[in-house]
Length: 586
Image (cartoon, rainbow, N blue to C red; front, side, top):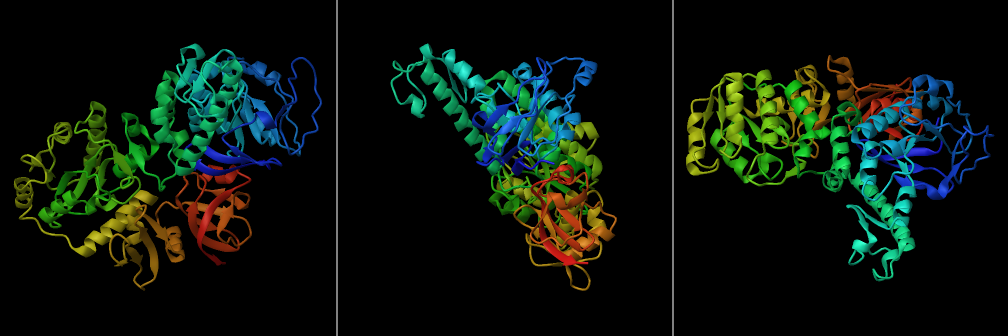
């Protein structure tokens, strides 16, 4: 059980945490000033040191280079003792699981310097190690950090680094920045305002370069911490990592580790996604939305489908263009918006994160990758949902290509209504006349279907019918409320995130229904405000940060929102597992 490390903020695998020394250290951080190495056991036996709470002590260890045979690692494995001071154990990805018996607060990856610079090896080693050590412990990579790579290290799940590599580079006359390194003799001026750089480039020597490199690394870490707090580290990575090929390859390989990142990525957040590169298509938030729309969502309208382009303004229904589409369709069709990088967005899910939380770079041109992704999502959507007619009210710039590709693939016939641009008088008249013989759906049907669609997306396939088959709807869109037949409120649609917030009655209804339930089992106490991780007995494996959860224990029944993933709740010994919205004693 760790007593000296706690995670406070999460952004995918990256975390802002606290190494709880006598003088606490906010992570990701440099540990030079607080690290004490008790030494290697290879040359001689060593006693367990007398540590204290002012330092992180690396316990006596045996490090193994990459490629060491399993039997050798097993034969020379160290049984790390339990100590009552902040401690770290040296591990490889293969020995990490066994070393967790020591209850260390941090783990040092022994072959970090071998794998840095090699994307495949780095991603494989860091993700395996991170998965084999407790969630509430720190991962330390020694001798590898630079201002250019530290953001990617943090994105992969690294919490602690040192200045060793930056210092060595400085002694070699290499001036480090977040976009790479430069030889001192190639600098015409010093592109930094740190204390070491407050002199002319002619006076600047290698000793100054060491000081600058350390300053630049610490400044880069401050930027990383702030990005994590804002939920914007990935946006930063997509641009910053392009300065070195192995960093670009690393975050792309991390994207291929979907299970690793998905478990650690919140299902909702305030931060806007900046879709500036094609790499955005591989983000967990984008892939998760597409997966849920094509595997959980089910259209409940009997009307034709109208496919329309997205709008810059979010939610789409508040934009001028979508207002014009609405005037033309007049509730005679079910509207789905086509967009990059999201894919397709049914009208009921226009509020649901990240559908109203992204911003794209508008060039008027769709890349081949964007077309392929959106076409795949649209095709999967149409395979799941049948419509009597499909009307594509889209322009020719990429949208038409996608529709025609899906038409050919599924053997469907789309009706096209745009003559020049979707909002011209002629195009809107074509759309209106195409739907003139269709019946309208009513306000009640629209509201009910919206709540059911969000439930499907949020809780799982079939949840909408399981939870809301017999309800009344209160209030007005977007703040819809689901009420049972007795008028008791079950849930509210939270307009900011497009998800449902349950009452206690709604939570009990959820537990009693056939819908998949995300439960947190707690010990014998009544929670107020939050549930801390030590109080969690068990939790559903599929809980993610931001999920609605039912909290149940011998003395209490509650509903709230998860602050950790299910596996993290179970394995952690510090931190808030879930907030509590409503609670009653049982």
